[in-house]
Image (cartoon, rainbow, N blue to C red; front, side, top):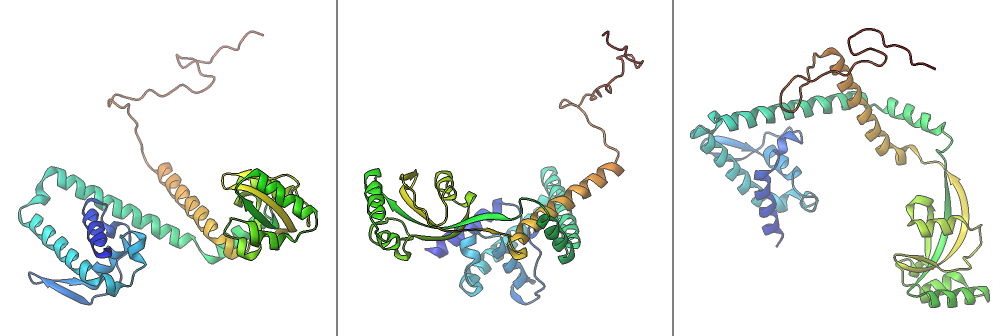
Length: 295
């Protein structure tokens, strides 16, 4: 079944953006086939594999090899035939090739600038800057919960708890949630990590307290017990993915801003007519000074 799905995914890649415009080709000159005297290198298969859906990228290359090789051979035959019949001379194809070249060059430049600017030192500087902000440290609670199907069941559990029943034991016996085997233990979490109703109820409790009213969410009815509260700072490793994303955006924004400053840019209306520039604030329509408003 997976082989048929892979063939379908590779077929769709004929209609998608070329994978070599998205991923660098590996430095591998191992020849895996020769088509009409021209070699196909293993790097071509690896590049195609990187453009596949996630479920296939996780599979060993050896499992994909035969199907990938067949499809890459097909791709080569199709492109060779397109060259033979002169498809590259068609105006639409020339335009598409020019756009593809521009896309590859643009992406290569952006990737290079991001790689140059995203240094360990810069990421550490950004992390240290975040640590100075008032909202860097996040409040967390450690809680257990018992998930029930009805409000009546939840109220019955609350009564048992108020009568001295053990929370973890009741969670193991009554909870319908996946945390039941561990006594309903959810570990530490921030407010925004849970659905709003659950988060608000949990963060309203002091350590050791149990909700006196059932909490309804889309999953059912909850009885919550907070075991502990703490303030924790995200580590550098936890913050790094977001820092990299933010820094990449900053680098690209700065790059585009610099290029705009040095470029001569003319804008036109959608129909190609000249675009009228709005007068600066305070200037009269004829270019003279605007008269002050009467008080």
